[in-house]
Image 1: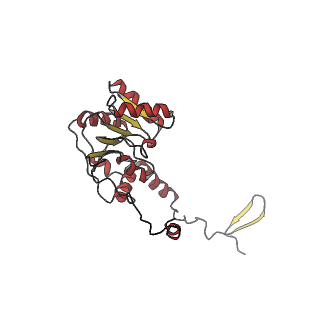
Image 2: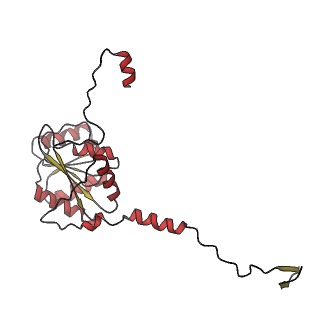
Image 3: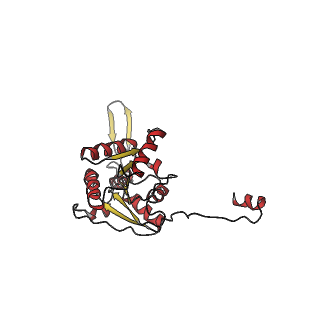
Length: 236
């Protein structure tokens, strides 16, 4: 595309907003290792310690978004949700409630990660890591905008550890742990192989060719002269 433009335009100037893997300089990145069954408890602890105003929580699926919203509302925490099943009017209402400070938390899928400007987001929580690495950049870019500091924290399980390592390679930095007073983390999660990796190892072992067994009758010849007449070791 650039080569074609050079032929069509007179002294064009290229303005590049960001490079691949480049994150907002004002966004501090953290991760917290957690088991899947403790994710919801961890979310509540982060919101309690780090604040529940101006927060965006990203989840992988529409069902997950609604489940989290239901759980937080039961804990008397007001939230709005945004995903592809929401109409344009419902999305606009949710964003307006958030912008005006009537609701402090938005739980969303990656439909909110791109192309929407939400000012003064304090921090972002990756409840689930994104399937596409580039979406991580867009997610955490919702905070730390216009010169304002912000941070992003990602929940990492054994099964998502490989994704986290790929993200670290993309952003070219080692993402540190975030410690909480109200939640005891288990750093060994970051060292243990995922179930997927363990299953692959077991599968590899199953498909590893076994040593061929030596036949017990390796040197035995059979001479058949009829039914029931079977003699072993017969001479030619």
